[in-house]
Length: 493
Image: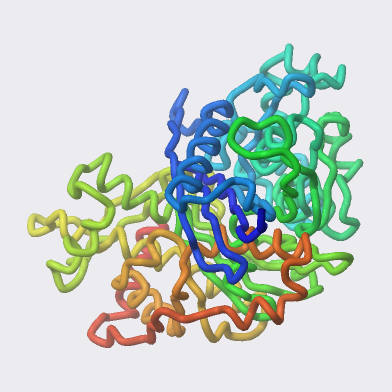
């Protein structure tokens, strides 16, 4: 049977999705399954690994059924994933030993504070490119090993392993044969030396983390392993591309050249700029990360992460209940000409780049008797762009030059007001591609490269198509006043 499709597994923060592409990278079908968010304590966030695996199984079966595709027609599989979320499971049997600790979880704040007080932050940042924050995997591992004694015992005996969700999914797809990750995901653990391209022995010793629990690190494109023993896919399909979701989106947006940038508006918002083979150390609160590795060539990026972006719209729906579905927010916001002076700072899990305020709390500021739900909705949309703009300004300072264009993707990229406001507040052209599923697209492209379905990135770039461009146009907005109010609100969180 002809192998004519690429399956992209997108294991996200709130759902898992399976997107099937043809070999020209057109979407053929999609399957999706949400899973539960677990909040054991304020500031703690967990996922059930078995529920995540089942969500992948269901979404793959749904995608195959929707596209009327025989699973034997799948030529390759790519994986992209929520990055820093930490999974722990038995080496034999693959049984989870604890819930996955999600990237949003703040339980390891005290551990981070101790590391900073010990004067270790600069050394860690130089090696890993990351600031010391609960966001990253290492302090989640430290917390688990310290607080669940039986897991420490199992780890030291070599009976359990650690991985980000790509590693967990890869392990399950191969029935435990492969325990591996790619460089982009490894670079998000705060354990990986982005210069030496290896797990850093000094940091592992400092953190008392057994090296044996860590996965093998491989390039982002290439055969990691083959499907085995599944009830929803045949044996022998190569898993040939892996990248963390934001790096995959940068790749899927065809930002292959130094200086090209993208924003993904998902649960959080993530701005990455390709810095080529150069490691850019940030002076303004951003992160240095590995974008991808193809063959021996490593591409780096500078990154800023907004913890709460699309999630603020979910909060309007599920918390305040001022909209019934996320798509209703634009209509509600359009019913008023501006935010009425209201500023929303959605620091529900602290503030990320460039502020890095771990203990920050959310804020609605500037409310008057005339404030309506529409003003709050508009201010919530604007908060996504304002947080992103803080990163853009910091990034331009670090790079010493302006970013000309921003390619955008993610669920909120469908919101025209958000993109118009982003273009205006940042004074940039904002480009929305025809296919906004660029995270899954990036994983599919990497997997295609990994098995030789395409030759190089030049071939891929020719297939990029623009849906709409947004230029600075909301001239009636008092930009200086909006930025001033935003900074005043940030001071108060």
